[in-house]
Image (cartoon, rainbow, N blue to C red; front, side):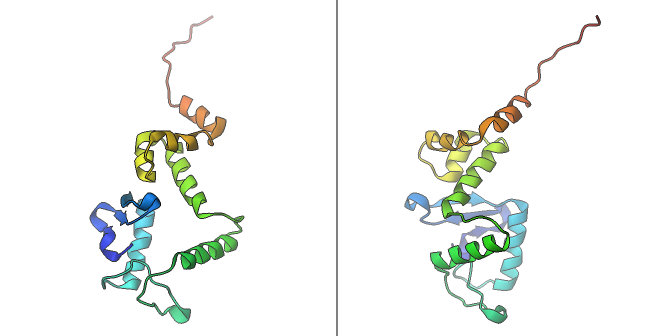
Amino acid sequence: MDLADWMELDNCLTVRSSKGDKDRTTYLDDGAAAALEDWLKWRGDEPGALFYPTRKGGKLEARRMTDQAVLDILQQRGKEAQIPSFSPHDFRRTFIINLLDRGADISTVQKLAGHASPVTAARYDDRRGEAAKCRAASLLHTPYGRSQF
């Protein structure tokens, strides 16, 4: 991603050549947008890669990070947080399941994940289990007035 891909007013990023070699727009929640704004204060506003590598002493290198460098950083942070090993796809799976858990409809999840079919996104729904079904059922209301016995 490049700095030009960030649209601050809409809290969205254009991700170029993502999964399936497609461009897609993704939206940041308030916390992620605030974190990005803080990063941009540090990074500056010169055109180029959105994220730069940071060297010892906080020195930024105005160049694009490699995929491996990003994975290395994530794995290091995972170790610090005592998270068991994970793969990049675990982020995608968590993103999709969290959206479904919070009530996003399958069509919207499909589009955000970049799936060609809602059937693909629906496969993640099967991983959520009984707790998700219980939460969904609790959203309903059956009007009933108790009788006095």
